[in-house]
Amino acid sequence: MEDRRTFLGLAAAALLPAGLTAQTPGQPAAARSGQELARHALSGPLEGFEAVLLQLTPAPRGSRAAGPGHRHPGPVVGFVAEGPLLFGTNHVDQTVPTGGTFFEPTGALHTTFASARPDAPARVLVFMIVPKGAPLTSPA
Image 1 (tube, rainbow, N blue to C red):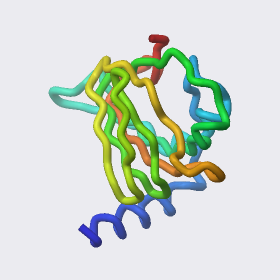
Image 2 (image 1 turned 135 degrees about the vertical axis):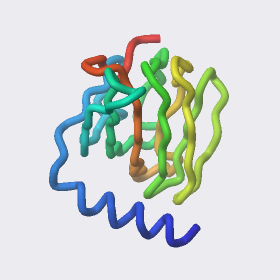
Image 3 (image 1 turned 90 degrees about the horizontal axis):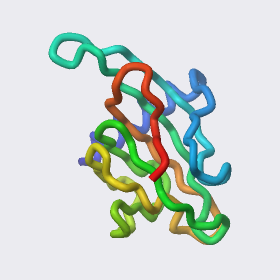
Image 4 (image 1 turned 120 degrees about the vertical axis):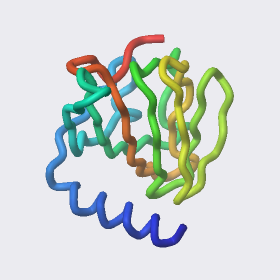
């Protein structure tokens, strides 16, 4: 487990300079601060889809108004590099510690995404599979 965390941390550090601003419609700006680190077209049985890697820095929960949520067009796997993180789908929230992971099924209602710390953002690496050219989110 520790080797996996070390590898993910080193991989994220190596990718950081390549980032672009990630767009997450429907969420306040404080909740969508982040970078798109990589986007790659897939082939074979997944032709027509893209793999997307993002680094997001969700603000502390108390620093933003709760929104109606949003949905993603494909599965989402996240790794909390700095946390803890408040994460929820379908109005069921959980706290994910630093080094923890979360999963969001395709089309689930993503209702909570904020740092669990009252005074600092979290840092999260997110891997998504999406249809080629599709927006990463859609309104609830």
